[in-house]
Image 1 (cartoon, rainbow, N blue to C red):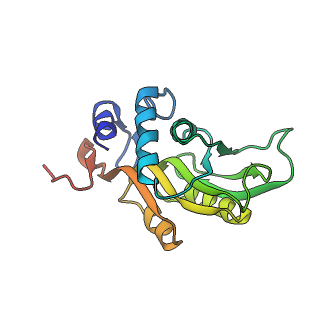
Image 2: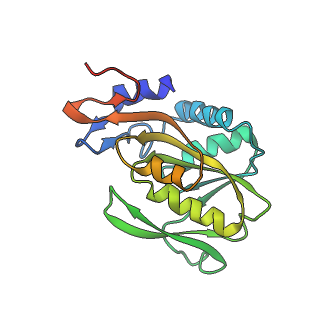
Length: 194
């Protein structure tokens, strides 16, 4: 998705050869016009499925998931990372390790919101080591829902996440595939090295 790649080139900040900061439009401040275009792209790529729910993980996956849900006219369910007084039992849960936060969280979704009658599209902001997506896959499998696939805004293809998801038999569609963050430059898959 060229619009997304251009936004990453203009506003993305490299914190290391493994960490790309995109908080000016995706994970802190949100560019709603870009998120709408991202939602349209996900809907286009998964138009061959009868999606009944979109499932994401809080918090950075919510904006692109909500836009795809708006376009499809289906509910968006997000897995919570922390328990609350209102989310204590009757849950699907999975453990997810966060590479950027260096911590493991239990993510949970109420059994009231996903069932074996659903076809779900899983959406997340980043795919690096694949742990968040694998946690969402686990939750969807616990519910018996059909998984249409995983939609990723930005994939770091130099890490193993996409391979792990494909090995689990799940389709992955990434809108921007980053091949390298070396030498202070974002290089996307398919671009020639300068």
